[in-house]
Image 1: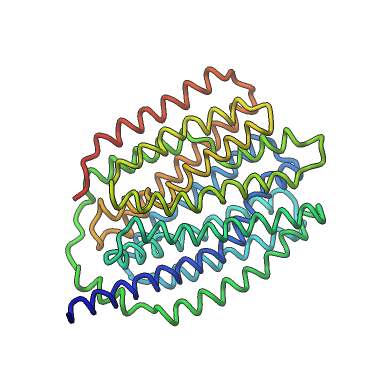
Image 2: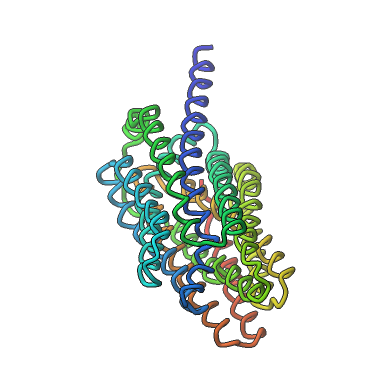
Length: 396
C-alpha cells in the first residue's frame, strides 16, 4: 500500500514537472514561433533571395542544434541545467529586437542569436524531461511537452497573423512580442522555484555510473535522422514559395497563417505519436520518414497555394513526430549519465540536416532545377535514412 502511494505521488510529481516545463515552452513558442512564420517574408522584404532565406533558416537551425554538443557536454559535466536553461530562454529577447529597423544584416544576426539560445537550453531541458519521464513513459512525457509547446506555436503565429493583417507592419509586429517575452521570464522563474533541482539531483545520484562510449545503435539512429532531415524541405522554403505565389495579391498575411497550420497539426500529432511510441517503440519512426518524401515533392513542384497548403499539412505531421518521438528515442538508446552529451550529438546531427536541406532546396528553387532531379534527391535521402533506421538494433 505504501509502495502504491509512493508510486502515485511520484507520477503526480512527474506530471506536474512536465506540465510546468510545457508551459515555459508554450510561452517561448508564442515569441519565437510567432516570429518564424513572418521572418522569411521579412527577410525577402529586406532584399533576401530564396537562397539567402533558405541558408539563413538552415544555418540558424544548424547553430541551434550544433552548439547543443557543447551545452550538452557542459550539462553532463557541471549539472548546471538551470543556468543553461535561463541563458537559453533569455536569448529569445533577440526576437522583439527585430522590431528595430536596422537592415538585413542585423536582422539575420538577431535571427541566428535566437537560435543559439535554443542550443543552450534544449539539452538541459530534455535531459531533465527524460529523467522525470521514467515514471510515466518517455513518449508520453515528450508528447505532452510538445503538445503544450505547440499551443504556444499556434498562438504565436495566430497573433502575428492578426498583427500583419491589421497593420501590415513588420516592425510593430516584432516589437509586440516583447510582452509575451516578459511573461516567459516570469513563468520560467516560477517553474524554477517550484521544481528546483533537488528531485533531479537525487535521481542522478541513484543512477550514477561511468559514462563510457555512447551505444552504436544510437549513432546509427542519429545518422538516419540526419539523412531524414537533410531530405526534408524546411518550413522556410514552404513559406518562401507561398510568398512568391501571393506576391501580387497583397495577401501576405496568409503566409503566417500557413505556418499556423503547421503548428496546429504538429500539436495533436506529437501527443498521439508519444503514446504510440510507448506502445510500439521506434517502429513508428517509419511514418515520418516516408511522409517526408511527400512534403518535399509537394513543395518543390508547387505552382498553387492549394499544393503549398497540402505540403504544409504533411510537414506538420512530420514535425510533430520529430519533436516528440525522435527526442524520446534518444532516452531509450542512452544511459542517463551521458544523456546531455547524447542529446547534444543528436541535435547537432539534426541541425546539420537542416543546414543541408535549407541550402540545397533553396538553391534548387533559385536555379529552377527540374522536378525529376529534385525528386531523385528527396527519395534517395529518405530511402537511405529508412535503411539505416531498420539496421539500428531495438533499444532495451
